[in-house]
Length: 280
Image (cartoon, rainbow, N blue to C red):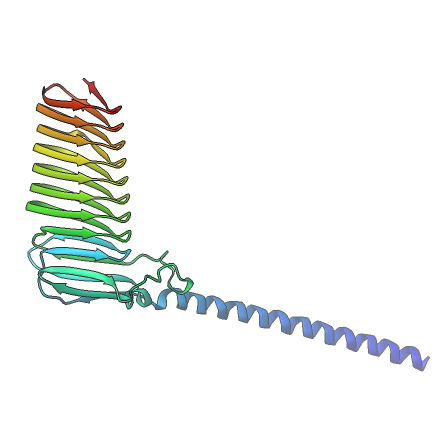
């Protein structure tokens, strides 16, 4: 009888000990999860900063880092940067010869490094009275809104992108290496040089346009009626244009030009499998 009593008591003690152990482990796990959640939230927000930087005045931008630039017209200058502090510290930001230059401090980029994950974008919000020069590379992007520009010189390469909203008196744009641009507004005179798979979209109206295109470049200006157009296309390039007075064509090497609307055809030279189509 004594052995049965001891055995029963031991079983009861073991059950109590097991229950208390399970409860302690569950409480510890719950606290650990809560702690991890707080630390994760702290980590995800700790390095995201917004900071205004004070620079001398500038009229152009040169961007050679994968950042987003938002530019709006204003009477005074302001530059506010937003993003991961670690990535922002990788950037070199200076003004030289009236041009704001943003680049990486190192010779080689580390944006794809696990430590510097570029899924968190870096943005520069810029207010300035006017802009006359834009140079973009390294997958950078600029969105620009200006009421009017007397002249704009733009250069895009290496998968960079630009959106421009506003009128331009004289535009000189050069694009290559899969760059992409969209300009929405009136352009009195435009000189366009596109190559290597770059794409340009024009929406608005113009007086004269000269486009030199090669290497599978693409121009979409069918919603951009222009008085006089000169097209020089080669190497599989495509152009969709709308002239209201006169169009001049030099097409070769499998390039294609699509002409929307009715206008007079001036000088025309088509060779090497190129094609010209009129769409009314």
